Each structure stands twice: as structure tokens, then as C-alpha cells.
Image (tube, rainbow, N blue to C red; front, side, top):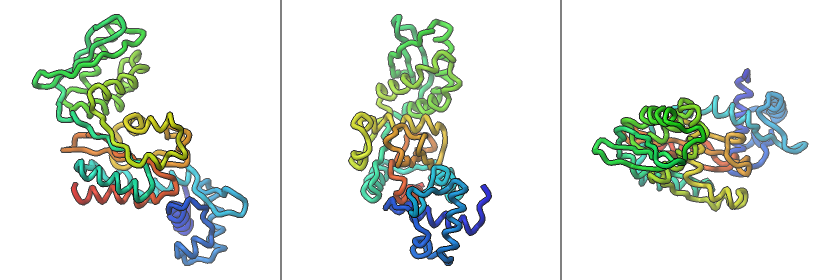
Length: 314
């Protein structure tokens, strides 16, 4: 998008004033006074009109200030943040995660969801998929000591021995040499390479594996900040289901990511964003740290809070 340097400066000022926790449209006079842009109001107003024409801003009401569009948020994150290189291979310890979650929830009135894996030290040596009943397969995930984690999964309608063996081969490719949490993450990321007739069941199997193996314990802090916007049924899905959904969307993506609008799982979160970062130990994926906050929250400050923890204890 071809935006002049001056218009970029004004756009950045609008975004910083909008994302200040107040959720108010930004007027040209505010840009001049509060952002200390050394331009007159008329010049700023004309620039904001150009930015609106470009699809980055819109006016919620006649004669009101401007607010960012989804395209505006896209442009802001792409041009003004180097998200993929922020908190890359982020390795906070558990106490830092819990402290950061409480700090962000309280300071920015947001809901924070953190995966707390328990069995991530178990390296899987091989996987076996066995016939169990007419409706189920038995999955064995065997570590190098010969200990196994077992779970029954519902067969796909097209199940036969050939499909079972194909799925067994794929599961070994996904899990062998990786901890349980990393294997589940790889199942999300590599779903398109699974045998065709298994595609429809993969999400259900991954969720069942995560619950059975206790890989994705989660803590949810500050869900009361969403009481006014989310239905009771959706509030009950905060936790592991949200983490699984975000992982589905982001797969193996490292660094900080932001999801909003149609990328969010619930329509009642359309005025919110999800800021997410995977975290690691010894470069092995453990889980995700997710923040659900309003679009008008101090997003840049939240991103910096995550980055600072990374810088303190890389």
C-alpha cells in the first residue's frame, strides 16, 4: 500500500490514540494536541480523509473522529511491528508466566489463558494404532522406556485395516522423537498431510488426546472482563478449547501473533483481539500464552510486556 511518510505518521498517531484503553474515535484536533504532531488540524484532517479512502480508517458517526478498520489493524501490525521476531523461541519459566498473566489481566483489563503442560518431558519413541472394537481404535504412544500412554478413539466411517496402517504411519511421523505436547502441536500443524478419511476426525482426536493425556492444563485469569460480551456457553469454552483454536490458526508460527475479526472463534469477540505467543523450553514447544483484550486496549504496551519477560530471562 502506497502511503506517504506524513500520512503514515498521522496513521500511527491515530492508532496510538485509539489503542489507549478508552475506545473513543480519534479527532484531528486530538492528533495535533495529544500526539504532538507538528501539523495544523486541517492538514491532519485531510490526511485522515485519505486514510479513510484507503480503507484504513472509518467514521462511526457523521462528524465524529476516526477509528481503525480491520484493514487498518492489518496495516498497523505489518508496518509498525516486527511481531515474528518478538519473543521468538520465548522461554519464560512457569512463575514468570503466572506473574505476567496476572499483571496483564489487571493492568489492561483483559483475559489471559496460559497452557501449563505436565507431561512434556515424555519423549515418544513410537506410536501404534490397534483394532480395539468395531467402533474404536486403540492408540498407544510409547516412550523410550517402554511406558505407554493409551487412548481409545472413534474410528472414521471409512475405517479399514489399510486406513488404520496409513494413520499409524502418519502418527509415527508426527510423534516420534517429540514430547507429547509437541506431538499434539504437530498434529494440528500437519493435519493436511494425514490420510484423507481421517481429516474429519482429527480435531476430535487431538482434543481427546489432550484431555486424556493431561498435556494441556490451562489457567484462565480475568475471565470476568468478558462477562458483559460473551455468552455463558462461550465463557465455558475459555481455556484449552481457545488454545486449541489458536494453535489451529497459527500452526507452527513462532513469535507474537494477533488474531481478530473473522479469525476469532466467537462472534461476541468481534471488538476484541487475541495476542498470542508460544513458549518453549530448550527450544521444545510447551504451550501458548494468549491474551484476549479489547481492540482499543494498549496493545503496543501488552506486546512490550511479553517481550520484556523474554529479554529478562531468554
